[in-house]
Length: 247
Image 1 (cartoon, rainbow, N blue to C red):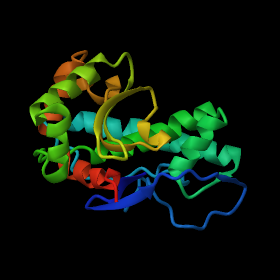
Image 2 (cartoon, one colour):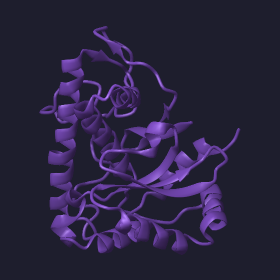
Image 3 (cartoon, one colour):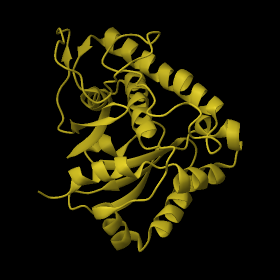
Image 4 (spheres, rainbow, N blue to C red):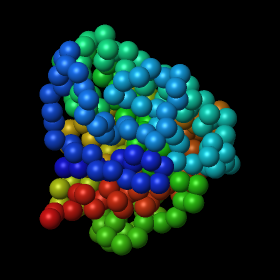
């Protein structure tokens, strides 16, 4: 399975989901993938995880998500996960070109601090690409798949809102596709993602409180309704969906 991630705010790069075993103590000179960014916050420690530049201006999602929320979410929360993940990679002596491989290794090796921070760094990178100030609607093969699975885009949106609102405590909401192109809605707790098990993820919405509390307080459902109906990046979802289709 593959999943699309962008190497710049305007382009997408396929990320191979085939597992690899991170090397310990080796010099890593290969090109990085997954969380590679065209620019990075220089205050974040160097390592395999990067704080990617937002694919939109901080104020672009307002009034649905405020500039202040984006500034804190990206510049503090996301940056913190990146810095801590890289610190753990250095502490453990792990060298790998693939953030996904590091995440899977950390989970299998029960390296909890590394797993939580690395997974959250990856999830947030995917979240930013799942959003767009333009919003829009699904089209083409993805639109057809949505109608097959949910009958309509509006029905999909309603189910996304309900599933996200029903996720207990912190976590993530995902639109996914299996290797036959069949769609499903998944929720995960804390830092988990279906992508870490090889599932193709099309979009995600962060349901941790730091994603919405400044704007909506405890009204998670209101946040979900607004962001799902007006700020999802369906071009990104369609690109990801193409990688799930049988060849």
